[in-house]
Amino acid sequence: MVSIIESFAAEHLRCNQIFVTAESLLRRGSPAAASHFLAFRDALEAHCTHEEEVVFPTFEALIGSAHGPTAVLRDEHARMLTLCGEILRAIEHQQSDKACGLADSLFLLLQSHMIREERLLYPLCDDVLGQSVFAHHQRSLGLGLDAA
Image 1 (cartoon, rainbow, N blue to C red):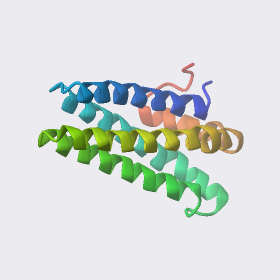
Image 2 (tube, rainbow, N blue to C red; image 1 turned 180 degrees about the vertical axis):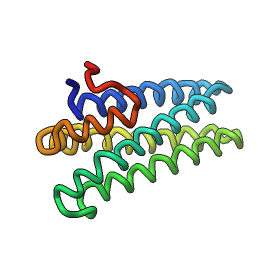
Image 3 (cartoon, rainbow, N blue to C red; image 1 turned 30 degrees about the vertical axis):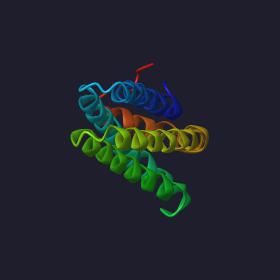
Image 4 (spheres, rainbow, N blue to C red; image 1 turned 45 degrees about the horizontal axis):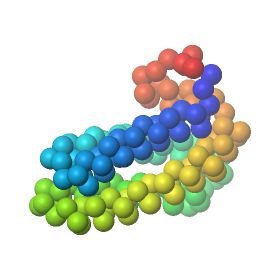
């Protein structure tokens, strides 16, 4: 069975791949940049929702607090989604330099956020919370529990 870290890290990789394509299109001035940033925002939002509805509450119940690392991660989710909206508005208003600067900021936040999750939160979840969180996550995605 796939671990929590493997499952959520695969989502990170998917989000990163969409972002890299969107950013490349943006820097080349392609009209397709907007649709790719929309796809990125949608993928990121779905990923954040899975974490905030499945992993975070279970982790918080275990540690007895919602004011620990998950509070910081939730705040970063909100900041990343806000940046996505700002990038889309800048693209819409043909403010390429602004959109590129915002994309740089988003990239830095996204990478540091994912590192914290993959190196700290997910391994702890695998060790402590185990397969109950993973099974719930798989059901929320509509996947079978025996996926490898």
